[in-house]
Image (cartoon, rainbow, N blue to C red; front, top):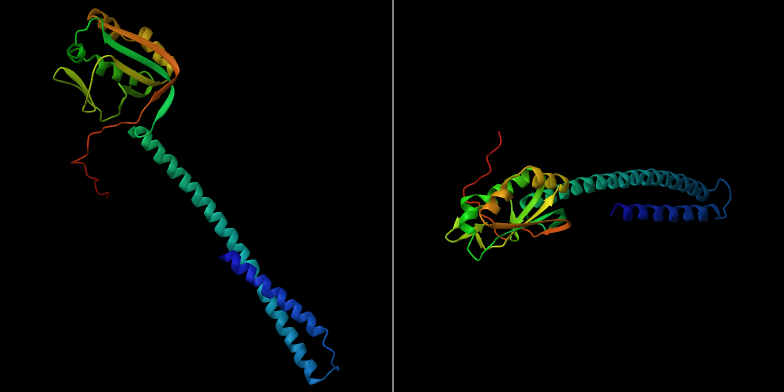
Length: 229
C-alpha cells in the first residue's frame, strides 16, 4: 500500500513539472496581470512540488522501516518454529533417523519370554541404561519411548505404550554410537544375564536407524497449567 502511495506521489509530481514547463512557454507581455498570476501559480506549484518531494522521502523512510520490522518478525517467527520443532521432537511426534544401534532380543526356544523379561526388568533396565550412555531416541517394536511411556507385563505379554508386543523384541536406538559401543562392551551385564536365562540377543550398529513417531500416548486428564504470579 505504501509503495502504491509513493508511486502516486511521483506521478503527480511529474505531472506538475510538465504543467510548470508549459506555463513557462505561454507567451505574454511582461508585467501584465496574467503574467503575475502565472508567476504566483509557478511559485505555488514549486512549493507543492517541494512538499511532495519531502513527503516522498518520508514515505521511502517508512517503507524501509516496515521492511526492517518485517525482517525482524521473520527472524522471531523462524525462532518460534525451531522451538516448536524441538518440542515435537522431544514429544516423539516426528519421524527421525540417524546413527545408532539395533538390538534384537528373543528366546532360544519357542517358550514365551515375556514373563522372564518383565520379571528381570530386562527391557526397562536396558532402556534406562541406553539413555544414560548416549541414546537420544528409542523404540521397542516400532513403539516410540518417551518420558510418559510404560513397559509393563499384561497377562502373558508385555505392553509398551498400552499396546501389546511379542518377541522378538527389537530395540532401535539413535544416539552417540561411540558411547553406545562402550556401554555394550564394558558397562553392562544385562546381556550376560539374558544368556543365562536362555535369551538370545543380536546387536547391530548402523548409520541409518529410523524411528517412527509415537502412535499411542496416554491422555492427560488431570494436569492444568498453574497461574503465574
